[in-house]
Length: 178
Image 1 (cartoon, rainbow, N blue to C red):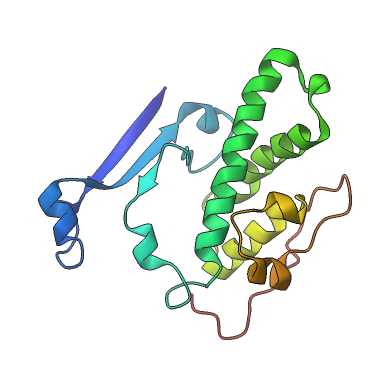
Image 2: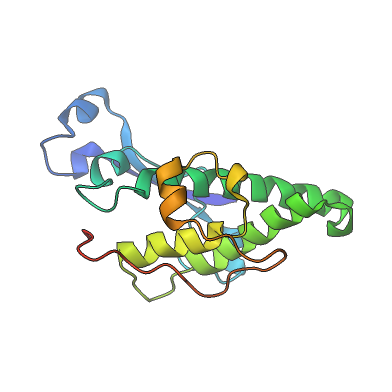
């Protein structure tokens, strides 16, 4: 069972969101997961059904970093597949999974424990985006289809076969906006 928190535009300052406010759409829905909470993930936000209509206006080269949108899309896709594999593994067992499926299963767990699980700590946007590259390093380049080639050329550092990245290797670029 999940708890949904909805924030409507009426609660936010007027301005660029007036068009959304007139249509009455939710700007943000955060789905809290009891399963993630039981497993000690804090905050226990289930990112797949959660949504934000504000994200696109606040990311990119002028706000965060130019690879932000591509990374967000790829992270979402990999986590969605990892969750599907987790459901499959519950039926057939992990021993029946192929190498690719096991990689996505491990990614889903690492995503929850290293990315979603922030506890009381805070991290900068650069640290978060670099962590994303680190989590995605387990995948071969051809599986990262939502990331543009120029970003892959600059930042993708594939992990050794069978290795799971444990520490961030990418450092923030000098002068990167936060």
